[in-house]
Image: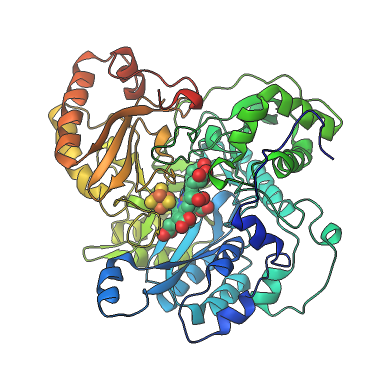
Length: 570
Ligand code: SRM
Ligand code: SF4
């Protein structure tokens, strides 16, 4: 039941609301259209529903023009995203993903910024088998996309392994407990028998319309803010007291997406609203979600994220409403300190004599290059590894929980395949992430993953000229302003504007606690390098001891600080 003082924005419901409403709990005509052999695509309405099953219909944009010329339908293919809470996978699961990528996908795997796998390039006729095979290793793709709670992230850095285990268990619990309850996924993909039900029994939390927009949760374990907790709709910051997990500070209202030219859209940071003990987390998450369900904008999707709901209603009002729904109050937030949002590479020793190796994976792409058999190397490790794999929110990979005895064998394979912790790269390159963008992302305006390594070669030269090789500066590039690589939290950010053109952003904090601001608009490579040469040279010469790049550009007056998402565009 809603609060009389709070209201949801008016306006006619968006087309997606209608599609969800008519879908009979996310079924639509998916079962039938997936069987249809006439087109490799599916109708748009079903594609909207498909997202809730963890997949999107895409087309290979590299082939678009040529196929148009030949009067062929676009080269339709599906992207499939796995739900992998906390990014932890077993060797068996890794081997299955590797096999499916070759059998049905484009022969590569993408490690995403939300700690999971994507396979690109799956043809319609292979989708069902792919999902079945994923399911056979106890993974699924339910709610990996769509207007529901998404893959729950948690800090993957292994140096607090005891707390990591607890936090990972919680990420899994949140992910499982907040899943849509409809059996649509099981019926369509896993041939489960159809069961009827009422809205109340089918989706007690979400209801038949689900949420107005996607919803994201992340758990950070200080001092690592690798998951960028302030970018989450709902974030939890682990509070560790006397070496033990005492509970979590709660943040609400973060998000990265925006649209070019619409200043009513903006990236925003979540705000801390209090502290809760671990046993209360799921209850709290459920109630936060119902507030967004009841008050989010169901008319205009670009204003529908929870961050806009929080900013429109007011943080205190949302907190009051939350406490009313909970029937208890949050405690005062506790002290915490983050010092970085990147990954820590190489071998590290955790608890119980277990070792963890964080590998640098450029652009999160697992592939065999001509001279670097990355995919084969990891496959060979998975064949003998008894620990786990952890996909990080910076698109890297941790070979986790390696016993001292097994370390020798794993190290030998790492050496044999030249798998790298990136030590031979500059620190700035190791702190760079890029979203998928072209050729698969239908929303990309410019290259990101395919172009960033090339740009980094040139940035590396400037870095070397200035003796900054070991200086960790986060760089994030996205092919459009949706922010899939959390561009607004990169100390240097690039957002695609058009082919070869980017907006350049500066001034985000190294620990993910301050957004950047636009420095130059619509510039190409030459200008990017010219600007960076000047600024990085100044940083090399004028920085104070231990001063991070994002702080320096503000102190030096190169850019003004963004103090809140609402002044991101000013
Ligand atoms: Fe994203 C849409 C890829 C993390 C904000 N994102 C997309 C789509 C599905 C494009 C589409 O809607 O047609 C992209 C598929 C590209 C492809 O070919 O694979 C896409 N997003 C990705 C991934 C794979 C980027 C990557 O290279 O790692 C990440 C997958 C995460 C996952 O495993 O679940 C990914 N996306 C993010 C993040 C980062 C995060 O969550 O930490 C963000 C910013 C945080 C946020 O949500 O505020 C993000 N993606 C978006 C948005 C903008 C949402 C908004 O508030 O406006 C869209 C567009 C949309 O939803 O309409 C989008
Ligand atoms: Fe696509 Fe834009 Fe996301 Fe990049 S930021 S993956 S271009 S939606």
